Image (cartoon, rainbow, N blue to C red; front, side):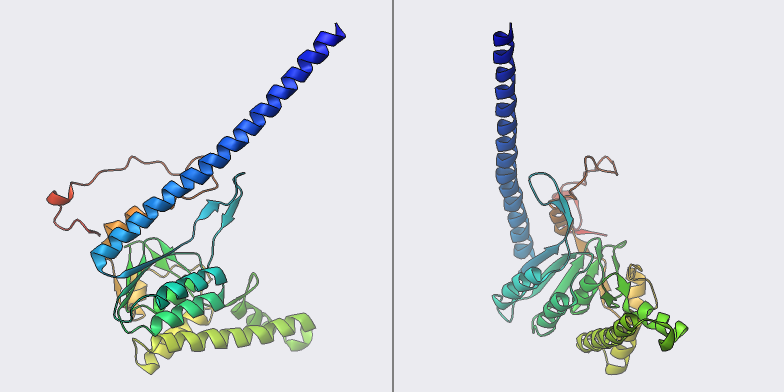
Length: 294
């Protein structure tokens, strides 16, 4: 009896291995061809938007994507790779052609954000930044470089106060002020020195960006407000507040931007935490302004 049982066990093991490899190959093929399909849809959507606007459209969209075949979720943020790609797109755009940036990001590296903002500020043609949901921290810095910011009515920007690791620069400085230099470690004193420099550097850069649209006194005031650390780093700057600060903000968000965002689904979850029944709007021929949603 041992012979047949051993053969049966080996047969089951072989079937299990075959099933595993078949499943693995299927997952790889689905990701390869499925990803290409989504990328093609995104390219078509960007092309349509460029046609409507007669502009160069750059999408800087960060989601939590499934970064591997095993579904490891990695949050995106503004990186040097992003700045290289955006700068290349700007460089390849004729000087007289407008640039539209679709921006959805939690922020990222200061250096990368400043490189993008500087390149946009130096453009002669109009630069418009579209914020369908949020553009925080470094994303706000990029938005400040635009001639016009178009935000969804409920979208938000955020402060651009520098962070040292996970610590706000302003809080490090404040801690040393409260305890006194003699009552903190050398490491904390060095962090405080770096924090003072970081806050000054970012504040000066923001003021320089804002000089494109504001008088010097106002630019310095707004830069101080955004960089001094008066709020937490995730404080939401609404449309109304952005206008109060002197930013030129519109809520005339083109429908195409929302359609494009649908092609960047949030990854990493088994099922969505929000369920709703999507409502279809009337056909374009029945809509007074088919390109805009307020």
